[in-house]
Length: 116
Image 1: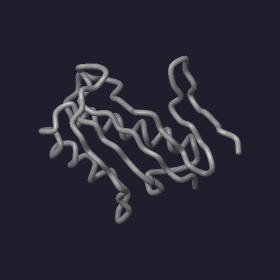
Image 2 (image 1 turned 30 degrees about the vertical axis):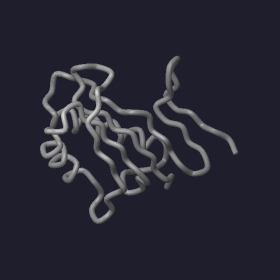
Image 3 (image 1 turned 180 degrees about the vertical axis):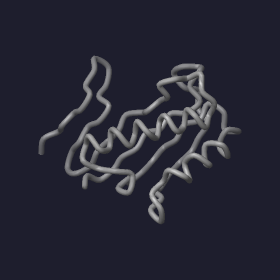
């Protein structure tokens, strides 16, 4: 089976698709000056766009990993997540505290999704 890559850069691809599954790289906020809610909305919008490009959507997420720079932000992040996640279709998810690649980032999300 072929592997398709989308938005390929020197260091990474934003998406790889194989055997009917889209694998998204870690998505981080475009504007790191925002608070956790703004950064979360930004990342989730990027995920919506990438999933659409791959031929999927948030209702088809198989697994999600959320990395927070400060675990104390989990309640505020969950408010945005709960408003975004597909109704009655929440995916398996892990949320952990981690030191992120840019100290201004408050969140990074990695996920896999089935294609439509």
